[in-house]
Length: 430
Picture 1 (cartoon, rainbow, N blue to C red):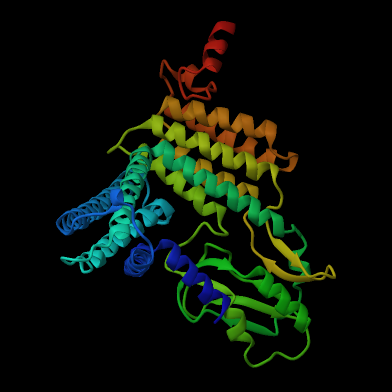
Picture 2 (cartoon, rainbow, N blue to C red):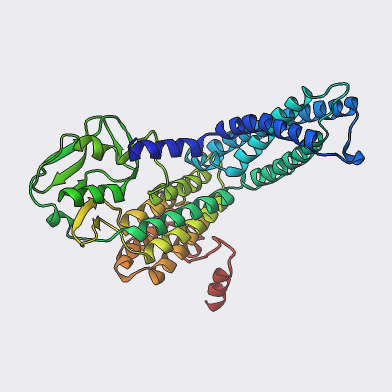
């Protein structure tokens, strides 16, 4: 099984809601068998003993309660899907349905259901699974606690700022992970000079979700070749499109194309596993949707900018950016990959918000504060791009607020959009 297949299986399981309940449904009857064996080998205190009618009533009630709670959890999940796609971003759903608490809640509820139903079959006029009934009571309490925790998380995640914060944390984790293994090499074109000895094309269409960097470097090192990716993580490739170019002399094994193709995972949509730009895309979508005429909520856009600023600050202070070169243990270049530059990240994070928020005084003031802070905190080679964005913002404000009594206010910075302490200090100083 290739690395790409394993990656897709892992991604499928992370995003699937069925395997947790199925595991719970299987473990429930197994636990019922264990408690039955415990009942036969242990003497239960009288306080833990139940009459047959009492045990049947308790177990029947638990079965009905778990069915009701499971249905309510599914209803809440469907409501979350509707809210996320209508208010936040459809891309956010890829993070929402990976929530481990949601899967754990469903697994425990279904497991409690099958466990209690299995115990019902053991209740007779002369035999009662006393330990099992007590365990069922503990499980239903645990199910209720998990449900309350899930409901609390669901309510809090209905806030756009909470969504932006969650996506921002994912983006920072991905940036740190990618930075740990990548090396900038601006001479990538010179390294890959000459004609490739093999071109590997895609046999299906889809977005490049991830690349097995270690696998490609290892293969290239063993066969004394250089591999150059023709498409970046996050790009959509069509059937027959060239994905990988192999350079260097030496024999090319017949199964090379299949091996290399198996180290590039394709899927229906992008993921954030190796693509921090996709996390930025989600946060920008939240801000842009909040600025739409249908919602008209610039404060949400300002809150999204808070977390976008945090991600940009990390990107601006952390190399590498641009074409990436991965070397083997001997320091020989073995893998070249397209990489986004700082300009690419900044353009993605700022352009659409500036365009759709050009008439919102909150948005332009928060954008200015973010850009000025970035200018002071990012690496020196990134400051030119920030200066360009500040000039674009100046032009946008000059056009959008031309002749407005608020033009002077729109040209000042405010970390809160409007009403922040920086604005008050500026007014007092003037």
